[in-house]
Image (cartoon, rainbow, N blue to C red; front, side, top):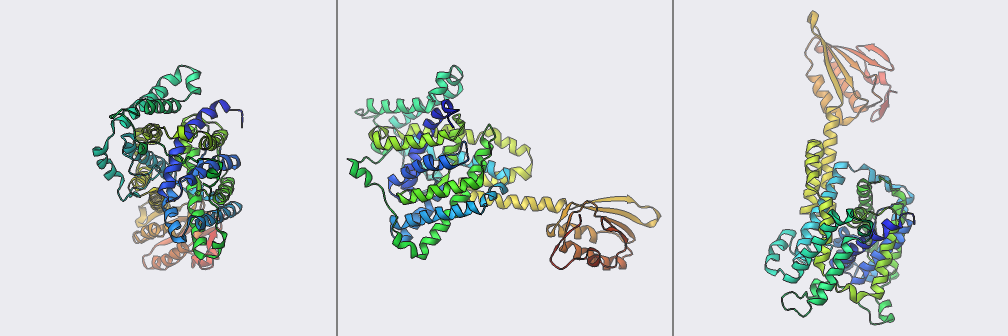
Length: 530
């Protein structure tokens, strides 16, 4: 793990600055104590990072769970009761891992995964524009279109125009300029500029700007536009920020419902993030998904036991990690230690960081996820790739992450069914002489009930006096539904003077009296022809 430490430390600093406001913002959007988001970020970095098999994935509190958490706290009556559901959710995730449910992540089409990354990139940029200009009405980490402040993504952009703050805007522009200069020019000039990352420089400049302009009436940045880490007065008040589960609520059925919901949604988000980060990884590492579920389950148990929010692997932090050159899991682990040390030792310094500077950092992350060239690339791949991609992007931007992925997956399934419908068979007209149409129909390797419509249409369209050669040589599986269609067609074929030659690995038969008897099948079964 220490082999790439020179790559991982600079990357961990960037991830730390991305994670810090998101941990706080997601806790605020969830109606939970601010410190609970930091606990989840620390546990996600140190514990999950250590146990995970992912080299570049970063875990922490997830925006996709914020609405669930907010509703669950109200339903269960207290945050301590909710923590019981988090612990139980972690145990259920362990069970998912043992049952090898991680394979589910491999069944999401590539177009949907790319749409998810692009949609998240667009959302990051849209949500950070108000923060960049000093308008912070919506909490960091609220990625849903309909926001917790009863507005939506675009209404916030319109309202922002009346609340632009000169100081926040100026340091945001300075920070963004530093990041672009670092990324496009300085990082190629020497190793020192690769070791010291642009986001660190931008944050330091932001703190200096805040201190210098504190007494300036025009450029001063108010506390509402700065990071807001809880500041304990002493060791006792620090320990007092931790909450603990009320296990007397474990008999409440609602607790178990919330626990299963958390386990299911957190596991799904994690598996999607794993699939996405593996695609983004320039070194093409493959994350063991079942091990990831075990790591996430362990993390959620520990997070719930000490007052933290539910944890998932998250694409925003993971993509920032990849873009910053991380090579091993040490980056995620170190970022967790940075969160832990900073909230203990330097919370007042953290509270001098302007949110507009962190918005500039997230602008770069979002842009790299949603580059315009990707839209053209997906369009060039054809409608079967571009439509699920586009639906996923629009769903994420105009509803939320899970709905967008669900819509994209639904469209992807429809596309698969259409392709299956089209590829069930090949029809070839070989001869029209002697007053007899000779037609050869070759069935695909696997023919299921999805292909019923296409095959039935072809058979019904055959003209009278046809000689049909039905080639099943390459067909390995044939659904009983298809055999029943052939059985019905054999009856109609006699009336239309159609002769049938059946060619399969079981033999060659002219005008079989019964297809069902030939395949020796039982109702509702699938026949192997190999």
